[in-house]
Length: 627
Image (cartoon, rainbow, N blue to C red; front, side, top):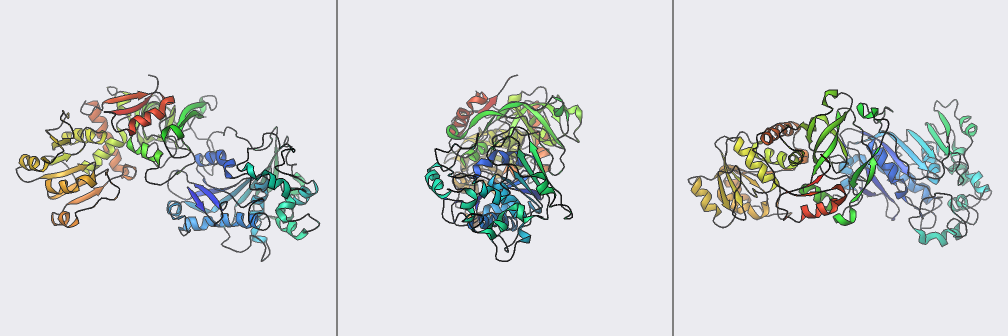
């Protein structure tokens, strides 16, 4: 989710939240590029992916840089400080223009555990931010809400600005005649190159601070991390021995300044590393523990890449869905990992990818699909090893989690990997999740159904078919409505959803009406539902044809009708467990069978999504793998 902390285009950051409740430690990512506006925060998106997977909240920021209005002294430093201070607003929910992000972030950001990680020029900003409590009044970055840093990390940072000025580091940056450092990231705004070449004749440090070290020595004293020591918080400086773009800061220079502060400091040199580039992340680490996720998955001789499908922006399936390799996911405490044999596509998966209701991307990368089935091949800490080899179907894989079942492997909490009876295929298992949970909740949230009249609209859809089977097993008298004549297995009566429906329902119920309606198109059917419901009846609506339907309030009120609006992500955990047990039993007994209209390979996921969103598939659409 993107949040603006100022009015300029570059005064922007992306907030990524890991799944799960509780206060998460926060990492502020600060990109490099010699403080220029030619590069942006996209440089650090791969690192954001890895940190979020490890349980950290990530605030990946941009700032006004050299070459754009307000960049340089003091704007670049002021922006970095303002971006960090914006975390206080996000946590409190009072950031103008960022209300949606603030609502999600409230009570989920631990502002006592904020760490800044900066690369190159961002490394200077990260360590400078750590020094803010000691800045004199009136200096850039002093005052404000001042969210304190618990630590700072510099990756190939420019930490001695006087030395950078003496070396004219970054001189004529952007000039095509000056080759960039080897493997340097591609610029986000290459059109600024001529301007930056003109603005950096003596190097980037002079352009940032508005003069050479001898001209504006006070600015260098305020901005150079080496001159701000001791910082008062732990700092880690990481530098590649093969980095030809930025010279490593001297280890003794840093460490000699730290004794006596009670805060450790140090330098680590990494062999063979040059400028920042994409690197495959190490195994996931439990947040704050430094301990690799436990379980048999660690016995496979290291991580391997697996095939997965994902999107990093919302939009049409053919434009945003990608298939490639990702790290083998590792189960955390209380989780299992499943080798996926079938992945089910639901309407919710499609509209998330389309951003149909404008929520945007909750994570930088999403592997879609919450439903799937396969075989457990690894377990995390606290999960019995006996579960390895178990056939399971899973739900909620991409509910408040970034990575779903459209991959070779998926990890989910152990209770959400439900035993799949031997008589039930993986394909049928991949059809049970969202539709079955929704149907069960809609039917039973108001109590038992024995002898109750239940009308199920859209009875040939995924939820409708599940509801018919579960209602019948619960002892209800089931009326199914359809748009075209045809059988609905398990229904006592099948009626056309036309103008004759109210009269026929009254006839079947001897004038009384039905006790419950499961509604797939609340906007279109609200008036009809009112006609067919008994006094004190219930409408359980899980979808609507219009986003803001008109509601016949007084008529519903005079009939004492209860209306439930349902979204499966937030059903109570106990209700989901009860639903899962009944769905497994219904599938094992043959009472619930979903027709499968299309099967696609993972590489054809875009076509699979297009088939699912067409509305005319005539059955479920699945991604299937080997046996």
